[in-house]
Length: 382
Ligand code: SF4
Ligand code: SF4
Image (cartoon, rainbow, N blue to C red; front, side):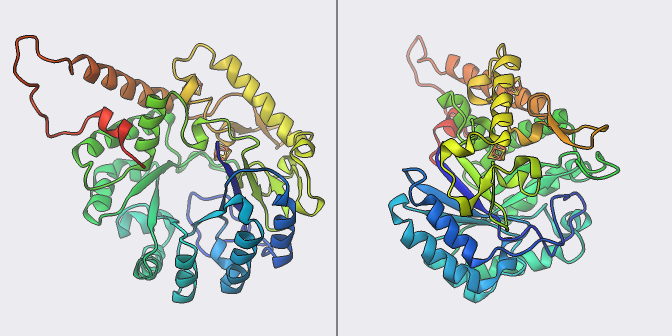
């Protein structure tokens, strides 16, 4: 996997989405000194291109000055790593100044929207839709690329047709997330969907995508099809991410990924100490994730999809130990059933297409179907 460093300027967020439990209202803001330490740390850390993704919490809380100073620092002082940038934001705090700056650095934006206003605001909070769409408009006016993640919950999954139509009618590309059981709330399953529901949702979207391939992009389906075709995961969820992805929390602590930020037991080091890869690999966090990879090799050994699934995401494998109240990883990604459903669907359909694609025995040409094929998705350029 390519080298990916996530910078988390704040774990706070002005929104209050019902199913989100990763926000820390007391979070500090990252200082510019921490960015300078990141630069020092990465100067001789690893060769090859790096992508920096600003993530949160809500990364725009850091404000214009933070980006105005950080972006040239990272891009000039680490120019040997050919840095590329991305940001994941709800867009509420987007303004012309920031959009202009992000356009200068060609920064693609990932944002979050769960569908039409009523569905979105029901689960993300009243007023969310308008604020995000306002920021979207500003970003688009400056020519920025924006794509949305839609989180499917126990509420919105019943409205999947309406949600898909919304993205299609508004020319918005789509990436989806299943709402996961909360590791912190008293009612952990209130918003979550089951792995089976998630698998069926992916199959539904695969069918819709094949019907509308020229009008929308569904990134998860692209990644899944490409992974099956290439026999290896093309995004972190289906590849071994440990050692290629790191996240830096607001205080400069280094974690394996943004999803672990704030969890003490997953701190691998601190940027101010300039840790080498060797030193990070001695941390208990690194070792525990490697133990998980060994567990995947064992538990998934018989699975047909292991080469392009790799046990899924280690964060999705976390469970809360009710006795110790600590997180533990004791199995593969809890979405395993969903992955089996969609990988089996893609593989079977691709095989069928392959078998029926032979040249007709008695001359004549193969009838042309208007609908796209799985092979079209597998070969689609990203
Ligand atoms: S922990 Fe999960 S989300 Fe984070 S990089 Fe690894 S696979 Fe991706
Ligand atoms: S589908 Fe499930 S069993 Fe197969 S590799 Fe993925 S996590 Fe393992």
